[in-house]
Length: 331
Ligand code: P6P
Image 1 (cartoon, rainbow, N blue to C red):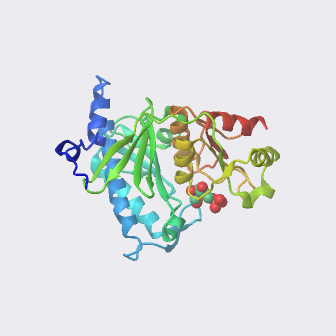
Image 2: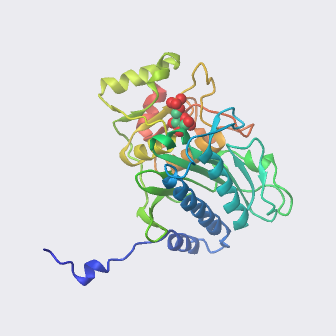
């Protein structure tokens, strides 16, 4: 039997999220720690939601809540739980003056009017997959407020445009739970170690492969896609690419980010503007895509250059490996 040496048994735990944040902050001499605290608050909410999700099969928390959100979509119980958990964590953290959530029509004022930041979020995307045990995710986007400190936040704080994001990321509740985020200088991934209750740096400086052989699209809507999307799907088949579509944006995006691939949610007859939300799904993932060398387009231009005009507006999205996104558009 091979007996592990003391050195092997005492391997370092790795870099915790806290230590990574503190180290990153030290690179910004004028950083005063509020953004670091905000990232910790998001991570805390992620740990709590991770626990709820893991119990979903055991504690009657899965399934529909019997209500609809502002979009008219059936809310799952965990959608509401996740929304409450994030709002509470961000309120208690004190750094955020207001939140825009997919689950609420209007912005949520936290009461921290001295908070420098606002957060747009989809607290739990893909939640209809919970009771069939498919990966789901939280998506978040962080802006520095433009309204006066001490005043309540307003629409202007949330309609600054994708290029004004100062940080964005997602939490993937999958076979393992991961937090992936960027504050503008690279993209880093942290895997949750349940035994420690810590996110540990596991994917340093993620670089999106320029090309890949995975395409993610719901081919059930094929007949209502624009011609260029149909051409691209034919192109993928001619190249014998792998179709991988799990019906959960964060899961599809994350796999394509690591392995190379492109996710497409085009406009359709039922969703002429596309299905995904610009402010808290498209913008944050486009931020991550670009900061890791990938691309994100609405079919006409860069997602991050779209000027927003309402909180819950939708956009078509073609996102992932740079060369593959270019291929979608040029076809
Ligand atoms: P469809 C989940 O509802 C979601 O917002 C994304 O997570 C997912 O990629 C997409 O919608 C699935 O939509 O129309 O293919 O079922």
